[in-house]
Length: 294
Image 1 (cartoon, rainbow, N blue to C red):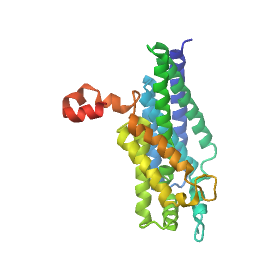
Image 2 (cartoon, helix red, strand yellow):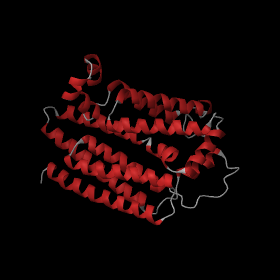
Image 3 (tube, rainbow, N blue to C red):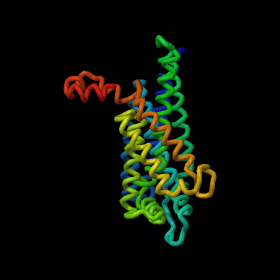
Image 4 (cartoon, rainbow, N blue to C red):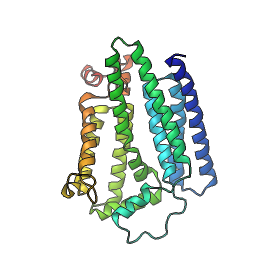
């Protein structure tokens, strides 16, 4: 059996597992006392999960990336769900507040199913990259293109746990992060949470799909550096393992993301598909088309 046959069957198995995840999620929404905020968030992303799971049957790298993003978001939302949040959170330290929304308890077993679906998506990406490399004129060049796409998708997925808690998790998570941001001395903490979550969401979508990659990568890189600054991490020191965390981790990811502000989305990106298409060539001003198509 050749690689394409494996991809064919793996894509159908991936769709089946995605449908199981969506069915389980809908069962939680219909059977448990979840908030309207959480229900709206999860329903939207489960719909995107189904769309991307059907799309990936065609074998597109962009579809596989979209499926990875939707899988990560749905898994994250159900893994941090709190059906019975504590009544009183007054007096908790900032680290305790952060930990309260970052760890769950979630729906037992749902995160494990997310890891299974994530593993299937990863295997499909690897097999698709191998298939393309096998038929390419330069195998090394093809593998390098796939490796850069994988890194871009991975750094985009890094934002999922953050915007999942900041803006999608529901009123309890939002209240916790508002208190957490206030404890850091930030003005208008609720607006800051919305701003942070929005930047994280935009950056994740842009990097994972390779859409407007250069400006979004620049946005994400600057955002991480400012987060290190406003969170006081530069004053703590370099090493992330220091109490309350140094700036090592944030700067590392800021540099990784900045690479794509220079390189762009690459061949396996929506940027390439959209801006090099015939409609874009016809409709966009020539100067704008040249900039975007590069």
